Image 1 (cartoon, helix red, strand yellow):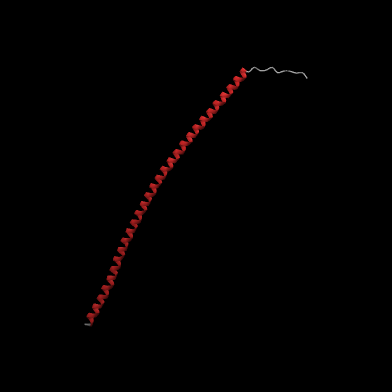
Image 2: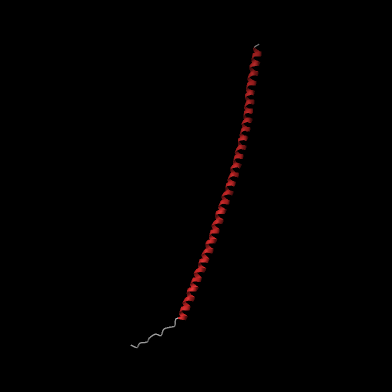
Length: 117
């Protein structure tokens, strides 16, 4: 009877220890699965963030491109306006010169009086 109790106790101890080892292995495999799942979620979030970042970059480039185009357009308008203003000034100067020459041509030169000292 005593042998039977010792054998039963030994069997119980071995089964109990092995069940703990099996439970530990199951726990490790489950933790590995959870870890892999978390990595997958993290990578998915990273890819989403990269996609959003690229989208924002595209929007900002488009916005900057529009602003740049508008600025260049305004520069071209200002250059055209400046050239037109310079040509008007040149025309006005030419008109003034021609009027001056016309006046010189129509007004006779007055004789200067020569007085002897």
